[in-house]
Amino acid sequence: MSPRVLKDSVHPRLQSGGIARPLNFTVRPHYYRAARFWGLHMSALTIVPVIAVITTGLTAGIFLGHRMGVSFAMPVLSPSSFVQLQQVIHRYFARMMPPLVLSAVGASIAWGALSVGRTPSLASWLAAAAAFAMVVAAVLTRVVNIPINAKLMTWRVEAPPADLSTLWAPWERVHSVRTVLVVGAFLAQVIAFAVSASGS
Image (tube, rainbow, N blue to C red; front, side):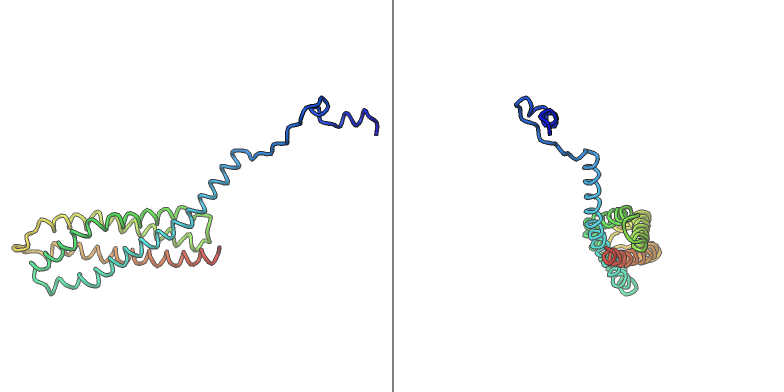
């Protein structure tokens, strides 16, 4: 090979006695952002279902326990005793249940949204159905149960309403419906979680 060819094949900075810059291989910003987005998406798809199952399961257990326990007390207890019992329960549940139910509803909706196109179709449908059931249960609670609970706290234990059974009956009917919805949502989430785990 001639000296001319050798000289032309050398980097220009080396020809002049300088130091050539190393090749700079960088990842384009939009590729990095896309990879980061999908990484966060997959992390959320792992964490959100766990939160949904735990919070929905706790809500379902509380609703079912109340339905199978306290709901049967009304025919047995005197009106005064029943009002006193419900007021004591409501004082604690009024602080505990809203954060729990809202967490369950929010996590269920997030799971349904995140699972679209990312998990097996059965798991996606079950997650969406659970989210719908939780939203319906929350709406029923807000429209029916919460207003009756507010009236409950105004009743006097020593002089309960004469038509107590009539006033309380809508609460029990809606509570039975929302118990079925939340327990069904919990079962759907458990199955969806198992299907997603087996398909991953």
